[in-house]
Image 1 (cartoon, rainbow, N blue to C red):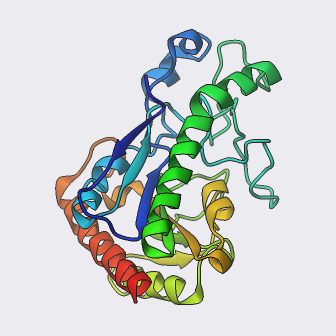
Image 2: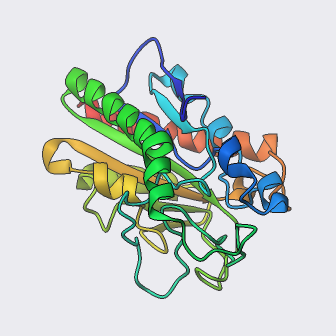
Length: 266
């Protein structure tokens, strides 16, 4: 099984869309190591985010999305396991051993994954995704002279181990304004923040490894992350896709990506 799904449009725009946390598959050789109750409902998954963005191909934007669950290996973490934050929040690693709520993932309650196992997972599940992502970015930049990577995420309304308050509906991450040009950041902020959704920039999320690593605006390679509360497009229980809510935010996303594409082409 491939480590990613790929949607390639017939036409091309200067934006590549990445969905690294929507995967739900656990490899057969690893599945029995995990707590079976958690494997059957991997709660830290960015549920349905690939479905939410399935319009992007019609806008000329290729989309790469994960197949394997982030508990197998997290595609949005540094491949050497360097932490993203140091402010006391719970941080799940490259191959996490707990959920965001601190619940043990493995039957044996291990506190770390063996280095040999990590290396194997990195080769089989992490490397293919990032190689394909780099290829998409390179092809797009070759065509337009510039490229924007839009990294898509979602999160529960409340995760007390990160912050006690409810998260804003939409959180734009730009690595403290280092991963994209000022005009692209301003365009995204204006579009996302102009409606009725609660909006925040770089707090409490600045963007993960993908945004920070691939965002090099000095080379005309830009990256932005959008985190959103799951209730923006799911039901109040954060279990089912809510079509009405999803259509409402999809219009905002379409407008934002369209405005960003126009800005890049100018």
